[in-house]
Amino acid sequence: MPVCSGTVCSFISPVMEDFGPAKLRDVSLDGVGLILTRRVEIGSLLAVGLSNPDKGFAKTVLVRVAHATPVHGGFLVGGTLATPLTYQELTALVM
Image (tube, rainbow, N blue to C red; front, side, top):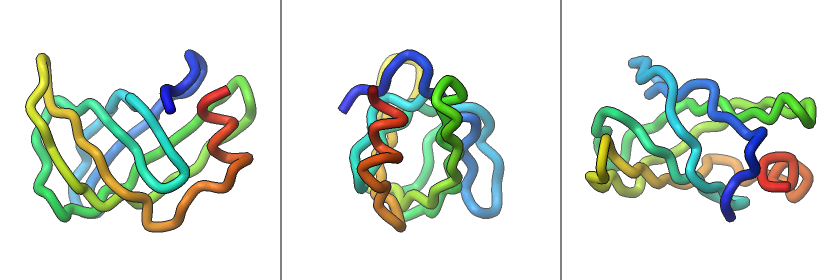
């Protein structure tokens, strides 16, 4: 599902290396799509900060990279969440 305008991805970093800010493209109960400026390896474990300050929501999740596809200006990175979001957490990001 596409995210709403107030939803941000405050950081993304592999467990051992910081990649800095990222754009959160979409989110589901069990995965995320991110736009990064650097390529990451498939299978990497990333720590991703998700938040929507307008709704008082912030959470750090672990994401296992499933694909990294070149796109204009960077890479579309998709991955699965180590622990799925709850319905309430998802709605804080998409509505």
